[in-house]
Image (cartoon, rainbow, N blue to C red; front, side):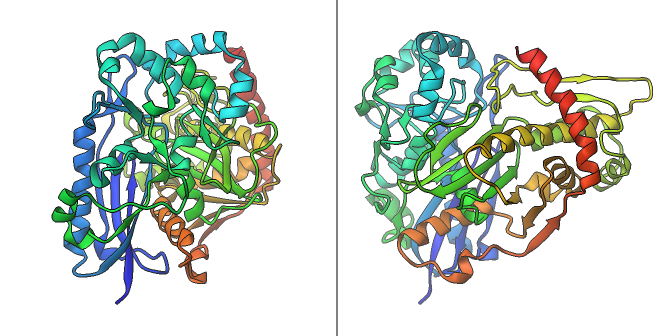
Length: 486
């Protein structure tokens, strides 16, 4: 009997799940996607209710099992959103909400961290700048502003750790998930003593990092009764969604970068080897596992910015109509300079309180001009990340993914022209889920040559003429950026 892998992609905007076969191909009739939204508070919060979020994962698994007849499921693998933080008590019950990467309320404590530490030294060790996305600022904020919840908390963990604890009864985390917290030593592959001591905590207050990337777990008795078909399934701790995306896009060598735009955006290079001696300023550095490093930059504004522009400028027509109109406009001909920081800035400056702006408005400016300027500005931010990545690797190929790019060929072409590189957009629509499956099958030595091959897709060729036009516009963008961030 053929065996399958249950794949879960646990994101902030949806929970996806499906069965995958031995070639890492999804079984289409088993696919489940349950959408959700982060709760955004007036003071900058971005959170999920922990109990509700757990229930959403359970429901997705229920639905996959209901759709998958009697297929034998040997492995369960997951990707999950990086940077989440949730507290639990000694009984494993949540003491806080799940705080996501977009959580901004800890921003006031970033300045305290920068006064206390030499940020460049911490960044070069943990791979993380000081920013409210990461755990040091979040934990300071909770300690100072939610002291009762902090006192009740025995462990601070990622949401994916809570899933594993609930299903399997084990408080474990992968190297991948731990590496994106900001309290992890990237070279020693362990929790960072200096940051933990500063926070008044110890390693026992965090999930145990698995001793081996081969470590798997079985369901608890209660969940084995709920899901008897999964009673003998081996469960792997989740890896970060960015790590899974690179694997799923076959970007696991120094010369290939993965560029993704979903709600947010990222550009990453993954490879087997050592952490760079000096991690370039403005980039982060995490891990896929103990063998492989992943380095890159992340943008808070991606597809979410595009949707915000479409909604708030009240553009008429279908998305296809609007795309066609954007395509008729010449590159950067609007004369606008757009700063895409509706949700603050992560890479490359990590300016916690950066705000968006549009400069150069004229009477002739229309809404399509503004939208195109916004799309181009995101491409300029990717160009800044690419320049820094090329300080440590030599990128020859860029593979794109994400729903925002798949739905907007115009934007994909803009990015290719700004970067001066061809972009390849493969047909796989679930790169993170596929990456989690490939990670699991690779660990257990069951990859086929077909499964590791990159699916066919679309090729966007850089237009060199547009590239030179965009260079001038990018310089204006950089000049304005530097003035407001000084």
